[in-house]
Image 1 (cartoon, rainbow, N blue to C red):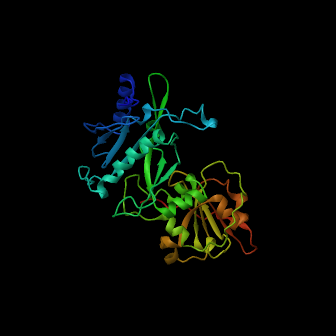
Image 2: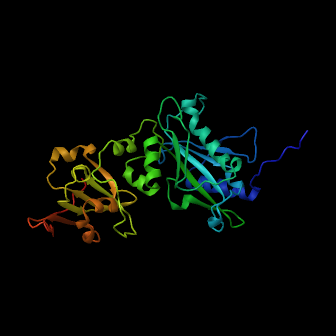
Length: 329
């Protein structure tokens, strides 16, 4: 008989450090899904129950980061070789039910924790891993995206006693159409498409943002790089511009509402109140994309928050000194 190979595990000092990081940033845990049989690595899953401040379950792997992932040559000095994963679930999620419609988030934590070992590869921010089919019968979500964890920047990184870093990534399930959008653009543009409306807590029936974009017959499909922005590039634009190819007639910049938001809002200027109240008539886009539809906006994009412009009778933009941002009630 061949000798069994012991799984790679953290040292006692390292596991203490990981536990302290999890409790500090995600919450205290008393229950752990212990792995019975281990191959390559030993992966437990910490269960942080819902609380008043965090009314959802948080499931965090503990053991994936004991293995140093195989990084591309260009990333050898990046410090990205060790990672742990997490997912957040609604407070009524049945963690003790083995039916796949309840178990699949746990299954995918285990699958992805082992993937770097089994495939001699690595996982990091922005990576997507498709299932090839819906995760379960009660959802059409089918791809896992790795993003920054929900609490704060400090939760992203745990420095081990020896100085190495363990990065924490949150699993965010996508629809097939959203996955296609991410492949055609990038992760930042996908997150901007969500517009800060999507919760980090799993919702098996949430809106499919990729479907709402793909259903529109956009006036321009060949998008060229026109601006060198460097900052948050998400913006709001109506279909009068993006579908009907109308020029921007009114534009204003308000304080950002979500991460990646530039604050810019663009309209043709002839939209009715009823039109604007229908979310299907607008969308979240990148500033460069809207600039391709109307390059006239480019020279005004550096304007301060709280600034608005309208296109006058001569076709030139003019500052609207009477415009004021809407005040929150």
